[in-house]
Length: 530
Image (cartoon, rainbow, N blue to C red):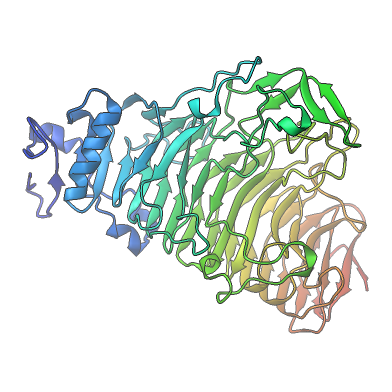
């Protein structure tokens, strides 16, 4: 144990001959280790509960390979009540998934000189490599279990003060989940910060579907397997991470057995296992209400796990070819300054792996999906496009920008949607009630990615369900800029709503559809409709 001379107690843990003999090789080496919190600038008090000052250099521990060395590091840190398993610059190959113990943070070298993950030049010197999936189009193919590894928790129900910091991960995901029970037990104080993830998909366990006569080697990207998936009982930070375009691991399958839209068996070529056709980030992402447009709605009493506090998602860069960029659920979630990109001109012949697409199919292409109460969604930058259906004549459904919908959700309560920029619409859709919603300073210029409604709406705010009207109260839609699409506000009864100072930057006029009482003033380039 080494006590530094700067007046603060900083502990360096390392081993020489045995785990019981903790010594420092020399002070020069010790000075290279990170003892400071990388999160200080965010000013989140709870992050100080992680034991940043307990640091062990994994490479200096005994073991035949990096996996044995990491096991030794975690054991040693656990004796000290947790700490940082530090990986110096280099590439580390893991054969299997990593299981984090309570109190352990995996940390790589701090990025320099580029520190923002949204910068294309962002790079990291500490790299993890997990096994590559070697596709084999014969027999039963390569077993899924040979690849698709990641970083998990040894005790999802209880592990706290855990995370991954400043590590470039190839072919691995980060899943710090709950215990998988109806109670959704999870520890607290969980972080993923400054990481880069490529080829971070999973394989759908239901493919091949032998009942449909699919071939044993067929594979399909798991639809709900996010690259980063973290749950916490309280206090969760996902920040400054980068999910770039994956690269060369995608593989194409010819002779793929599938059903056509009439459920007739057919065989087609060109089905791609696409590592970027997956959710980017699930952050405490739960279903907290009934399915469809008729509820019931989640509340802290019915779904307490869906209203957890202390969740921050910020400054991330996410590239998807399909699916959801960020999905969150909680009470008071902050989703700030993220950049989401879903490109145009992607052919999606199937979204399930079992049936061909038509224009009515859905691949859930959207930037952010909000669930819960009192969220703040501010400063996000998104470009979202829909995918082409099988026949390449129509694009499939969805294509929203920022969305809080009634499906598997709560009502909207005291939430804020401000200063976001994007090419596709804001959708507060069939919410079954709104009590407090502030929408200001957003710049929405509809492009090819939009799902155009009958009235081409850029800001869609509706408390109503499909067959029933619901109250809308305290909604302010002010000083937003739109082009091509208009604004809709709907609900009954309605009170204390306002639509003021909005601007249409396009040619001509766009509709301002009032299906709720609201004060209307100083809007430019709108035609009021009721």
